[in-house]
Length: 626
Image (cartoon, rainbow, N blue to C red; front, side, top):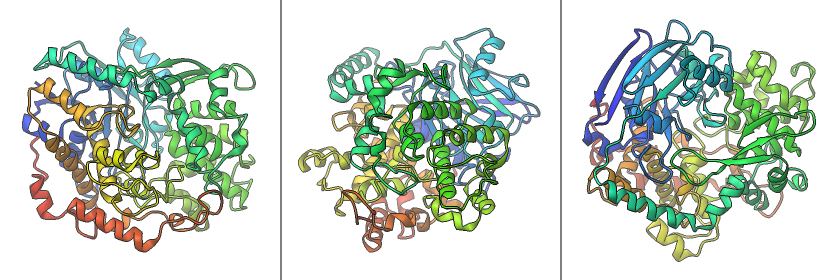
């Protein structure tokens, strides 16, 4: 029997309930139940940092089972960064351990009277004093918690100083790098005086057809193991995407001044990282991919710094976006954000923005505390996280979010901070003129988002018949074509939603490569575990339902079509390179958005229609079934 725990920090009370099977079939777990629970346990217009904003930890529906790459955990709560729907997904071992401890979901409300951490231990939840942990970084917090519990095998999700200080883009960390990053979930933990969630479990999981599950898991592993992407990722991690995206002018350099970074050649190359810094490869629980590096800086001023990662976005944000060509600087700054519990992606955008303002004369040396914020200046890059940690200078300016930062630095700075229609800082990728990708990203419910809507298959040069077979209907492979792209975006959004709801890593899906998992392979696992006869159509509809639930949360707070509008720069011609002159055309964009709304069963203002909600059995929400 799957269970959910409701934790009231204010009154130090825990309530445990079983999860109805009908609700599981509708929303699965992970991201799906997280969306349902947030909508049902929060009110319209709630302050993200108030005690009433729920913080929801959700293991994926298949997390922890004997299945490939089913190890993810989801965190959901209204975003302190945007004031919109917020959530984030991370790997490692917390999700599986939560399942082994007897809970699929934990809904945390209220505010503790003093710093507290939760110990979830085989069906029991304890409130423990975290006073000695307060002020520690994310590495120290986990070490001290293990000492306190005298058990180094306990799995811990925690915040660093950024979460304690309510930095709007603070994240939740597990191990050295596993992160619930975007949307500021770490600030919600800090607002509740909740330093960490420690989990210990040894309970078994119920499987209806264990022999069949073992057969499916072995078959799927043997298939994926033979793919090229599996071998590439085991050696390079997704750093190969840094090379690929730079070559195809798919990155953003110096805050949108260019889309190609030739200065990095011979300096911030991936092979240099592998030869000089990478010590070994690591994997999340339940996964054989081993896609994460453990690295050490072995010489120079940053000698001795060690960490995990980096993903491909790190050499973009701490390299090209900031105009830096040195791995030492990129890795040292990246590792410092991890320690403090700062979302490195959001932080990296702010860092590049401040450098851009300084270069343009819109940010004085007095405002920077005397530190030159020129492109690639190591001193500026290494000290800005400290300023955030100390709550001083420019660190404090950006800690309170984009609107406050613009107020403090002046309205003329706004045009250089690129944000999507939901207020989330735009990711440093130059895919604004790729039709399905741009549509999928910009309509994502937590904001512009490569992990929710980016259509990677769109720029892989697949033959039309191959791409059409994957998507399930005729699809134009030309990334600059406008036809067929609305359904393409929806297909990608649903595939990613399904992955997050099941606990499946996207690196094993067709989001990552065309010969990986679609809907069929996870469906085999679902039915072997549960004994259900769920169909592909039902799984698709569950993804659609989850997407609509997230949308309804935003609509309840006043969202409409305006929030699906890309930044102004997307409609301006690219200034150089192979894509010079290309941009979004307003009329064609609006027609594509209309088609997207029509296919989703929404009004032309981006609101789910009553008949769509009835079809999805969502017309009575909030139902408070759980």
